[in-house]
Image 1 (cartoon, rainbow, N blue to C red):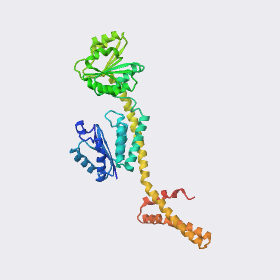
Image 2 (image 1 turned 180 degrees about the vertical axis):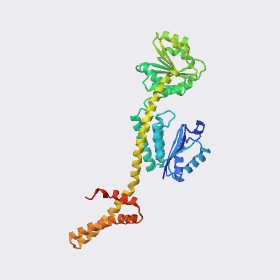
Image 3 (image 1 turned 135 degrees about the vertical axis):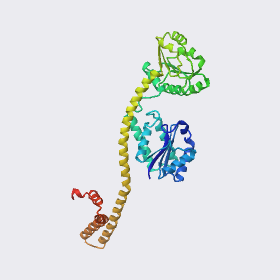
Image 4 (image 1 turned 30 degrees about the horizontal axis):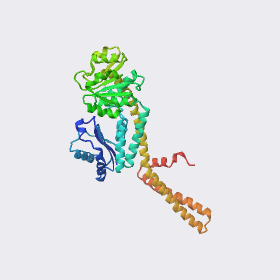
Length: 415
């Protein structure tokens, strides 16, 4: 039964469609159970995030799975869905786990999301040997790619680039104070990066004090009203702004006053807003290092180039791992036949040995019994192959005859 990946992502569907196809985490166990109980999939895992919804399944009918997905969400998804089967499905899984298929190249969050989806499916019993092998191998491949390539070495978000720039200015953050202006996603990410660097003190200012307070609780920071920013400028060594204000939040006169209080101790100011939050005239001050979004683009582009090189290396590793996976699959296909062959040989041996023991117990000459044992066992083992080879010869089946010579090592001579 084929391995199938059926899904849509940020490349094939707009956010308005993706958000309508998301499965809520609390509903997934019931959904997975329903798919297996109805016979739509023998094994199934569903990965559902803001950027992708994918069904990984061992199923004989991918079309029925698509129909179920469309009916479940009351949508026509034919233009947005992709379907990968067997080797293509495995390659897709490896690429997704490595971050090659993500909105941000190389982002690590998707690997955790895959693991969560896999554990959920395990919990309801919708994972069997096929998907177990796929996901365990996928996790190992992703780990290898992370450790052997630079695909995740440098962040490519604006927030991370801002903190990376700050690290170049400050030898460390343990003795410094940062002031973040705004409380949106960019500021939250900046706060998270700074917090991980053991920053001494963090201030968060926002027009909505309640929102600033909510964010400050997560990072043990102090929240201040946006109107009070000027009064706190002198406390900050690093200032990062990212608001939606149509006019500057921080003016040159306020920065001049802050520098005087700081006795002209340098300040690093990073303006991530468009339109700008910081008065461009601030850039003329000798003790201020002012950077904007355009200045960070070079940092982001450099990091992205590193990741793109990592992606090339990752694809080469995936090709290598695919070959290994295919080899393992072929071996697994042979295992039942090998087991059956050994069991048949054991039965023949046991039956023939029992006959020989009966002859010994009847007082027959041991030498004659040994000859009987060898002759009979040999005849019984080669009888079926010999019969099949005679039929192949009569039917001019040269492939079976050639295979037999390899299988029984006939071209290497006898021992």
